[in-house]
Length: 283
Image 1 (tube, rainbow, N blue to C red):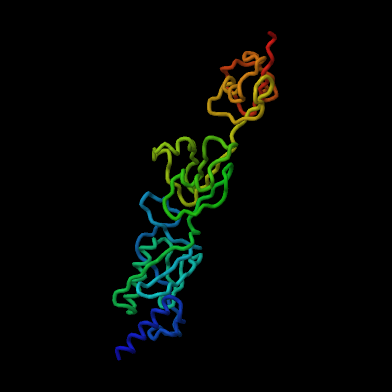
Image 2 (image 1 turned 90 degrees about the vertical axis):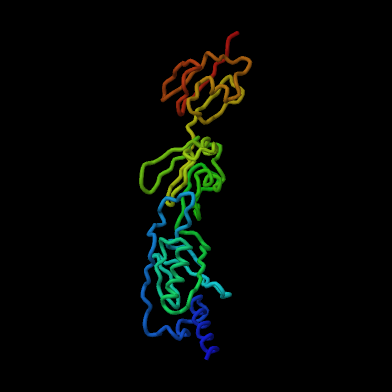
């Protein structure tokens, strides 16, 4: 009798991890479709803003593994778009909005309440993160979708996409799914000040725009096109282009702005698309 009971329990365990069909479990009627089982607990969505100590929230399209401790096998399953998974002993189970720890506790309770085990321990592991991600676009090394399996700061996301390119502006534009657009200076992200390096939220779109540029030619050592730094003056623009040549006149600078030619002092501010020509001095 004891051997028969042990074999029945082992067969039911194999049904849970997907090795045997549901009909192999003696206590699961084959003719009755299992109901969708809602899980209790926190109903956080996958779009909730993470905090430093948050765990991952399971959502649609994630792939999870379910393990009953003590058994050698695991069931790997994808979360359906309606937020459910399918288990042989329990049927459809609503899992979206739960952390892996909460989900393991809830599955253990359902198995216990169903009379399948006296006191089971269930581990749940997310093996493919698909429901929580941020989108990074613009002048970065590797634009695309970045899955977030924990709480990430802006600097970490920027590092994961290879940083910004040399043509990028000095700030990032962050557009959350809800709320106003925010801008963050890249140089502030590495200061250690948490207020300047916030946690990203699932669904955020992070954009690295191209920097505004100016053009400079004439009597400078490195003529060309350069990004405009915040508050840059014409004198600083000349320095950025390598400085004056031996015959350059730092006080005689012609600026073409919006189709008009101007003569400006070196202390004047550079504006986007300015064309600077440094003239040659006579003596």
